[in-house]
Length: 175
Image 1 (cartoon, rainbow, N blue to C red):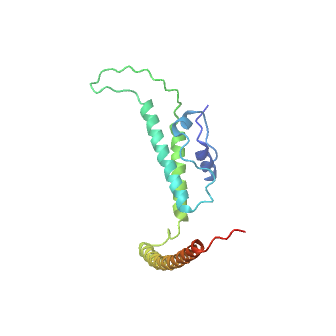
Image 2: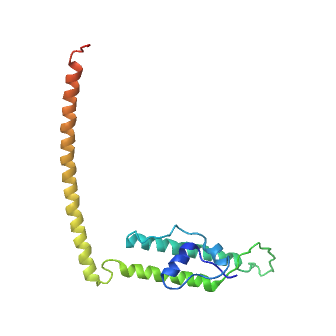
Image 3: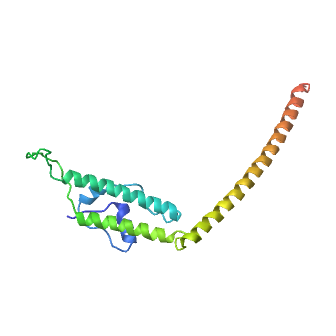
């Protein structure tokens, strides 16, 4: 049997139009489960991009570890080294490369989906400056509203204190 991709990578590979991943337990053992992926189309593009980059980082980490484990031991002094390895992981470099290339393609597609990705540098800077100005305006408005709400809260608190005082000073009647 060949290597199988983790479920998230298999789904993403199928979505990218590359079909399912093939094979036995090798790539699955090296790729692991990674960050939870699943149907993330409900998330915004930036979140999906972050998830893909995290998945790619996870693949690189695990694939590098798998390669290190399967590399033949070498002595620093050029003496023969005998090591018995319990590695039972089948290594399919082609499958691992396919998964990494698929992840890079998904990341490139997500980058293309970003707003303003097709703008030149001057337009992007202009957009950033507009967004920063909008942010400052909204921040000032929020601060103003927070101050107004604080005044209302203080008024309510003062009214409550007056009512509580009045209630506490009122004579107690028993029916």
